[in-house]
Length: 395
Image 1 (cartoon, rainbow, N blue to C red):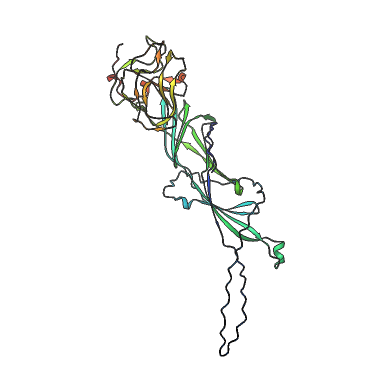
Image 2 (cartoon, rainbow, N blue to C red):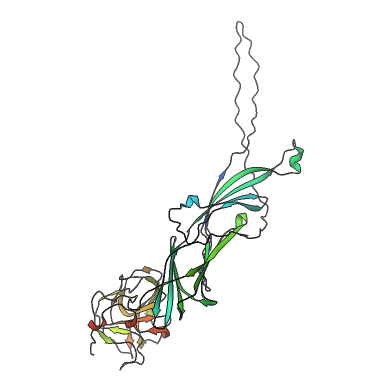
């Protein structure tokens, strides 16, 4: 199986994986006749002896060891409509090739189009991000019929013209490489995140100030080097995202109950600016505020041991934003884990230090537009709760 690529340069490449099973076709067998034994003399009656049966010899398949020359890539045009492909089984999605003399020739190829299921956009103060959800095949079945030229000295014409003989049929399952790009007019919109679960995918792109003229370009490719097969296709899709009102904030409260705040975001009496919100929580269960992936976990030592956030988690959410949770006592997830909105990820504590002094129990919570702390934004603008019920705790 081929290994996937993990790099990302504005597109999301996934390298093909192939699992091959070959079934050797029966070749003509040469039967060697038996010989008749001499009959024994009998005084009264002669009995015919039965023929002696000898085992058949089986001709082994011919193994091709010649180097396979490289073919030019063959381009497969797509039906770029967004019609549903629900109900299409993997067995119906087959590309068939004929392989002879180191070259592959396409016989048929039927690959359904990508299916768009949901397009939405989130407003972030003066900017927007777009979320695209859809479906595309996770595996493609490829059948390769391998032929050879049959030579027969009794047929002189076969010495000059190839008489094709089927040797083997290969049944291969391939995971296609896929690539996405988002544009607004001629301007490229960076893709912030991409997740895939089977055939379902979700991507987030942003940020942009205008909401119109959005376009997504999708490409796929399938490569099977053993048989010199390379096919590709794709299409462009105009995006008309449904607007998600700013009154519907994407994140939930990081606790299962209302907990007061000891320090708000922005310029405060203690920090200018304070980059998150401090909740006065003592050993309370901390919840993920949205679906996402854990991309950071450990002990914060960025500003040295005297100004440490202690045990922390960093989560990249499916809408492209990040949240961080500092001073935790316990964590229940690891880097790379998928988390759901409302899932328990840790317990608030007092790990870390401030000015080399031990700190009290609390959760320092941040919302960010990017991974770096410099992209911090006010959590109040993104957490969907009645903030009038969240009291300020004086310390």
